[in-house]
Length: 353
Image 1 (cartoon, one colour):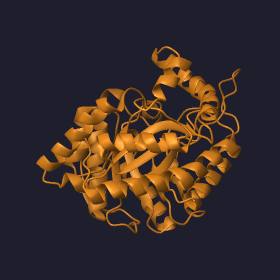
Image 2 (cartoon, rainbow, N blue to C red):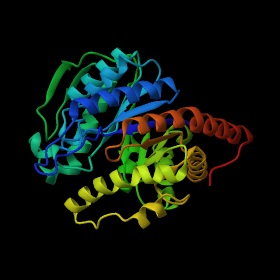
Image 3 (spheres, one colour):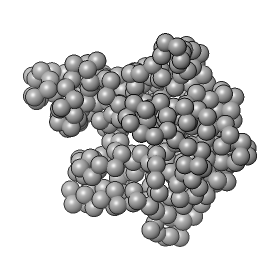
């Protein structure tokens, strides 16, 4: 199993003005986090795209290119690229360039986006939300398939026999589809033969098992080997040397961030009781010491049989030294144990549920 981290490169907000604080420092610290993740043997680092004052990362490919120059092995992905409001030509060029810089370590994780600020920013109509994604994904895959492209759609000027350059080291450049529990999105990813990243940030993991089963059934129906199509589980979490310490460190920034987002969407603020409940084995939140993480990843692997696990360690601003320690623990204690145990399970033919 591949184990990694994703980040939105969160930053503090001035409570009196709502403006972003500390963006240069947070960006520098993010690059230190990627460097450490690479050194301790983690497999993947993802950076999400957002256009809000609480996040720095409006252009993940730029940040990942800086990380590529400072790392050697770790794969570098968006998490996610909001393809619906972007130009697929430029997305491909950005990540093909990242692939060249990194020596073949780039990936694109596309999604429709859980926030909507990018749509008016780039002149897109939210009423076309799903149609935009479908059309632009079609174009992105066409570009990946051939360096010379002809294409026409409803939401972008047509392309007539044009070269799209540069071409990446990897052929094909990996493209994942991120979903949050929408069955048509699951079927679309499977029907296109694309790997799926399933976000689980609330509720019992068992209730997401039908989405993974639907993905594998749809992939097989489309003529693909479902066992050859990777699935990633992406979740929130934090770890420390001690379980209580992890909870005390993680809850305040988690509550502040999710409370702010919830207020925008009409949700009640998160409570400590909810946080603690989600931290248990059958909750969505990964929290605790290394053994807690190991137990939960392996528990969920019995449910999903997934190939990748990514955790967002910094849901809200966290102390940098604590984040670095969490990355160290994830890479040196959690990942090796999980990989070894899953390899044993596969060797013995132990099935997922």
